[in-house]
Amino acid sequence: MNDVAATSSQDAGAGMTGPGVAPAKPAREAGIEWLRVLACIAIVAFHANTKQWPVMIFGLEVFTIFTIALSVQSAGRRGPAEFVKGRAMTLLLPWVVWWLVYAAWKSLLAHRAGNDLFAWFAPWRLLAGPETHLWFLPFAFLATVAAGLWFGSHPPASDARIARRTAIAWSVVAALLLIAASAVMDRLVQIYEREQKVYQPWMQWCTVLPAVIMGLAIVRARVRGGYDNVALAMLWSVVIAAAGLSYALGWTNLALPYAIAISLCMVGLFVRHAASDTLLTLSGLTFGIFLLHPILFDVWYFVTSKIKLGPTFAVGTHMHAAAMTLFAVTVSAAI
Image 1: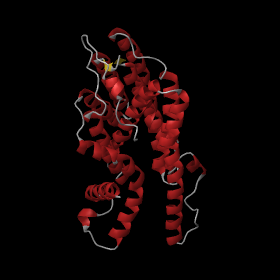
Image 2: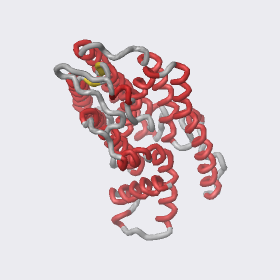
Image 3: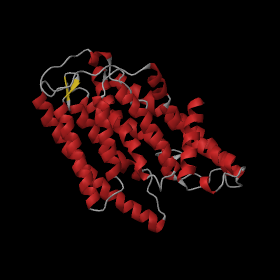
Image 4: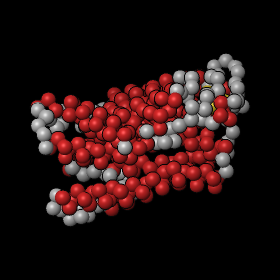
């Protein structure tokens, strides 16, 4: 998630002219940085109240789209070995460290509850982590390495017409994958509701696979360091159509979150002024908030079990989830 950062100053210096072609983006731009902050809060809120706030999963999709898009651009400026090493240091090393941190934390909680120290363990956690949110780190490593090595050596399109042709092709693939993922996710949710059987981390992977392709479509919408506005508009239109079709067919779990995510991404790409120092500081906290917030949830439940919050803040209510989200975001940011 710390990949959702800036394009390079090299990209910023590459001017672009022509109808429908946006000017090159600055090295750290406000649109993407604000999306980092918003997406991070949305993910924490989703985890705070998954059943009542399912639409908040849009934050994860926003993170994935820009993680792919910006990583491919980074790969184009670095050699393959350096790029893979950078991906490993950014994503795999934190995954290993936090896998161990959460394993110790889960074992401590199990001991306090009088359970076996490894009662939390299941084989699928080897692909994710002791706390489910950690699945994103190894997934992002594999996805960004594959995308970066495949596309990183391909220069941006030489003119807008080429960018539009390639972007619309990837947009169609993303739309078809969104429809398929919506159908699969609907089936998995039905199984969970009926049998309480969860397929992890397959459900999470299914959720973000369309976002990976959308990130590639954004990459192909670039023209010599800038973005072709028409290509971006085509991507948005096709994804919105796919989300609408999925919703009409009753596959609603991913439709609305993706409609929100792709719309926010378009807004972020069009807000091209430089980010302030304050915004950069806030966006720089998002990776730590993402990593820490489940521990702060446990702390919240421990603290609130000792005091009476009243029915307004009862577990499962919107106010409880909002208060827990605020607590987890602010305290983890401070830490």
